[in-house]
Structure formats: structure tokens, C-alpha cells
Picture 1 (spheres, rainbow over the protein chains, first blue to last red):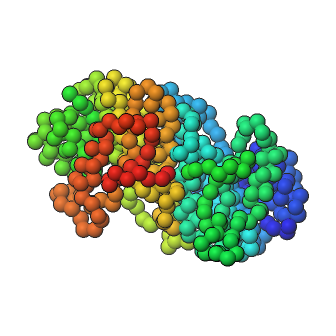
Picture 2: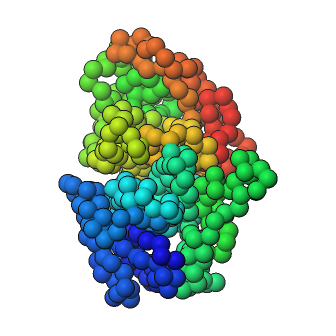
Picture 3: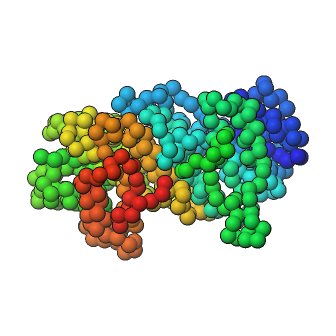
Length: 229
Length: 240
């Protein structure tokens, strides 16, 4: 309650339900990108990622609304035409690049820009909406190179960032909302995300150094399962 | 006669792999990119089956042009080894670093190391389809492993190799049942090869040594080809 949440966008029903969950709890939500009619209570700021001065412009826009941030939530899930192409169908390389820009570079640029505001907050929790389709272990698709490669790259970056920022008190969440899974819908999946993002993970009080689950970067889904990288 | 395409063959591991296959009687189409390196030209005098091919894997047109050149000399490929990689540049891919993150270099690295490898496989795939061996090999890295990642900065190269691994997985999902087999190889920290062929100081492993192990793994058939695994120059298996 009374936390300040930054979301990289509110574009899907899941995003909207997640934003509403924070708002219902009494938190403030600042979101980049276009206004979402389903979430009029959020504060919206412009963000044109990868343009000249994009990071500084985002920082100034958000800093104009708050002195600190507690949660950073990346909801990037951009999809592009041609993602259903297999390697034998003729790939669309520029769409794969577009996916990489939108789903990997843009959230990292937003995080880099807003890190001073997160440093000033007390939450220091960084959450990323992802997919097990980016799991090298598990991916079973024969197409969808763009989003899978983009999110896989993001997973690698997150482990590097976690190694850097965990000593500063940052904790991380990677969440697969399982779109298309029959046992969840955007409301229940967002409810799961809210719980997963806001709840602390176990630290054994007797062996704090040895048994601190927050040290591990893991991806969990809307059914509570942990996915391998 | 067995034939292979190797990208990034001007120096280092790519050159050592090229020479290793030539020694075994293969015809090798060797991708060249670095104008300062003439080691492939020197090798041509010793190996009549060596065919250097201009190839910039960051450019789809360059890959298409290279494929057209290769098609003039062969109707099939038995194996592709994707080795070309961009590893240089300033230290500008970390949080709280001395330099801000350079997003254009992140994209370039992805274009070469991830998308470039994918496009090489895509464009040359009809030639592999016409070959007997149907082996697709990717030079990856230990830093592709999210599980084992120990770095706290410098993700420009590392992220691209994880993306490459998942691209290989997606290819595998489609092509394994059609008879294709795959290799993901972690070559170790290799000594840099200078334009005159000498080795720079530092690093652990000579490229010739890593290439020898790579070729053993690339050329031998396995009984467990259904497993897509990342293996290193010691034969060890890495977590993704």
C-alpha cells in the first residue's frame, strides 16, 4: 500500500488487471505508453524507446510524477506479423529485430533510466512478464523466433543485472501469465502475478546466507510452476 | 565428398575448424569477413578444396550472395558451422557502469550473433536438405547459460548466445524429425589469433585445440541425437 509502481505499458487485458490490482491495494501506478481506457486511474507518461534521449526523457517524465519508485514491471509482449513462420517458410528478419527492440531493449532502457528513482524507493523489486517459449530447455515451438529470442536474451540480461543489483537490495520476479492456458484468464493470471510480485520469497531465518530463495532468478507461471531457463 | 560451410573463418576457431576439415578431405566454403586477415588466402595454396566466400552474417544480402556463390560449386552441404561472432566494442553494456548502455551496439551484436546465425541456416538450408549428413552446428558460449551466469556486467555478447540457443531449439523442434542433427558448442576462452597467425597473450586455450575437440563432437554421430545439449571443449555438458 502506498507504493509507487512503474509499468512499461498497459496494453493487454492482463496488463490492465495487474495495474488494477495494485490500484485496488492503494498503490499508485505510472505507466509508459498510450492511455488504457480500462485503467483511467493510472498516470501515463510518454516513452519512445531507442530514440535519441529516450531514457532521459522517460526519467524526467516519471520524476515529474514521483520522487521514488518501488516496483518496476515490464509488461512488454509485442507481437509482429510473420511470427508464425518456420525456418522453411522464409523468415522476416526485420520483424525479429523489431521484437528484440520492443521486448528486450526497450524494457532495459526504461530500467536503466529509472534506476535512480528505484534506488530512492523502498520496494526495489523488478518484475518482468515473460514466457516459457523463451526457455531453451522447454520451448516446443517450431516458429515464433522473434519473441522467443527476444525474451531469451532478456533472461540472460536479467541474470547479469540480478548479479549486479541484488547486493544493493533489489529482488527480481519473472512471470509467465500463460496466455491461452485454459485454467487461467487475464483476471486470475493477473491476480497470480500480483501475489507473486508483491510477496517476499523464503529466507531461512537460521541460515540467511545459505538459504535465501531471493538469490535465485527464477521464472514462475500463472499456475505456480517454476520453469527452467 | 563431404562439404561444409563455416562462417567467421578468417582466424581463430573458424580458421582452425576450416583447416581441420580440409585435412580430413572435406570441401570447405569458408566465410571471410575481416580484410586484415589473409590466412585463408595462404591456406588456399595448400588446400585445393578450400573455397573462401565473402560473408557478412549481419547482412541478409551478403548471406544470399554467398549462397549464390556456393551454389555455383556444389549442389549440397553436409554440415554448416555457425561460428561468426561479434565480441568487441567498448564496455557499454552494464548497469552502473562507467559508460551508459549503448543500445545500437546491443542490436548489432544481436544481428550478428543471433539473427545472423539463424539467417545463415535459413538461407543455406536447401543445400543441407540435399546433403546426406544434415548437421547444423552452432558455436555458442558458456555465458549463454542463464543458470550458470556469474557476470554482473557486459551482457552485450552473453544475451545473444542465449537467443541463439533458443533459436537452435526451435530449429531442432522442426527439423530433427526430418533427419537433421544439431550441435551447440562452448569453445572455451581461446587465444586471439593475430593477422600473421601468431597467438596473442592471455586466454586459456589455443583455437587449434578447441577446434580439434569441436570437430570430434561435430563429426561423430551420437546415440542420443534427440538431446539438444550444450557441450564444451572438455566434453562437459552445460545447463542452459
